[in-house]
Length: 254
Image (cartoon, rainbow, N blue to C red; front, side, top):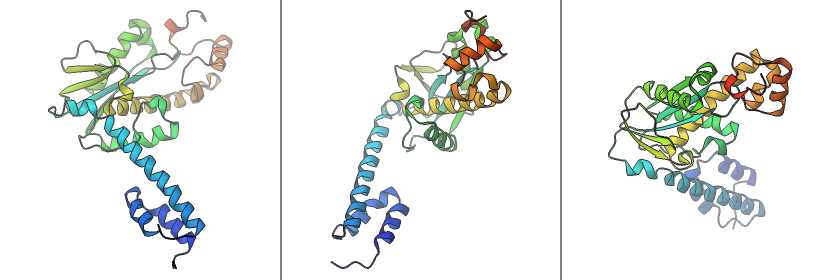
């Protein structure tokens, strides 16, 4: 069969196509027997299969949201920064629209930094509302990390522009909150709302630690984000603690 399009033109056509247009292109070129076109079609079949797989995974992460579909505002909550030696604990509360179809949302720990940054922008643009809660190291030392985490979560809820009807929490029940709560173990891998919150919280805290690195360059905060890496521990032993260190976590170094 004779085809007018050059292989380079077909490649560009596939590259510029929306993923939903790929099936039509595959059908268009299915009888082209040129090896280059066959390879292009095979590559895009793999791309399409990956897209369908991600659609299925994302839909599965809406199970808890669907089970509470009678609620108008469903809020996912997660935190980041319970374990580091330095920096705040940060929580995020996110209310996504019910027709939210953002792909690749997942537990922030399972995503690359680049993908988290991309999703951060998409989530905050799409969300009905999101709130951030931050509790500093001095407060963590005062009330302990668990209570500080709860405090950060309450602040995140308070910073929403609308009041949620229900909270989907990553594993915990937050004291002092008069809203129905559903704690979900490993919720950041099971609920799209909690996963979205985990991404916003992670990116927010990571960006903050990069800024702290400019103030305290000896501690490598841009890389370790306040966690106890070897370089971080060596810096503490050599230079002592900064105002953003959690003294209650570092009694062995003081």
